[in-house]
Image (cartoon, rainbow, N blue to C red; front, side, top):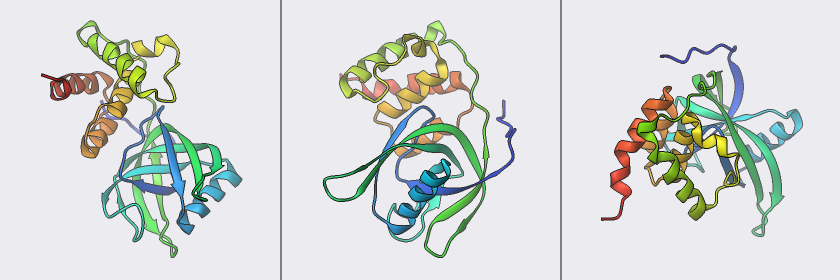
Length: 202
């Protein structure tokens, strides 16, 4: 089932990162490059979002990096001055999007035309994946993510469980990107279940 974009393309500043932001996830960033300080100012002024895309080529700082074609909308929820004098921000992950074209501004900030995807439908976690919510609870206890005290019902939402496991399991960034790009919550759970033996202690 393909995710057809139902909304017109948005023009967004893109923030290429070496990690993946999932819908419902949270991002903490230190901002020091002028182009990203401008991005934060623009979002603060307009209440707008920016796009987070995993880096395919390049690095987070320096020359403009090549972003992956599927990313996640991020909305800034908190600003703070860090002890090192840099600006810290917290942003929440929203819908996924596909980048249809990018351009690099003179200051190195990448902007993109993006088509948001519709949210995944709510599907209960099927019995054959019943172990996954249990593993997620254990990981949440150990790692105490921001959503740790979430509503118990979330653990029966296949999409939410898949995204949270993708976030907390030690997947490599390309695997995370693959989990982000899947558009079937049950396929994501099946692939996570198949990967799990890798992380189990003998």
